[in-house]
Image 1 (cartoon, rainbow, N blue to C red):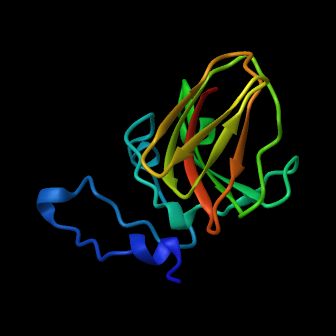
Image 2: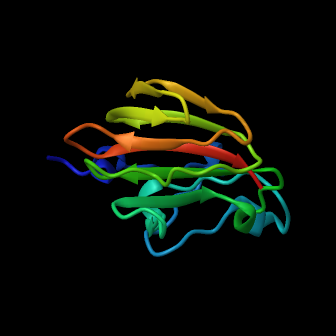
Image 3: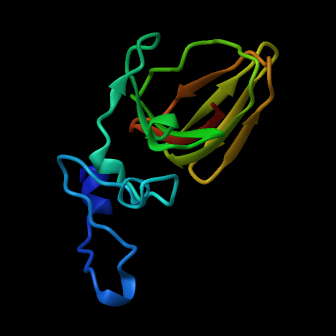
Length: 149
């Protein structure tokens, strides 16, 4: 099975016409904000962000793609990966989630129901709604989750 990062890797040529496009080295990157000395556009490749174990949930990792560390003033964009049979914690908080399923399938659980989802689906979780994302498939469940900072 090909790794997800290998599917994303493609050559990127820099030209005078496209000087705002940067190819960041694997070991790190420089954002346009750093180059310009302030808040600006940022391009960061998924494969360059180290997955962190999600402490409350074995088999779950998170990549903080964009956060306050990058100068984002309002929202954080995270990519979660959930191993087969694993799940996020069953929890609640005062902010909403917007989630987009990139790969895999499973269900989102609330206090009253389990709602199935699959690759290509979007999920909205309202503030203070108890919820949990469960991987019901045989492969990694991968999703984008956007939350306020």
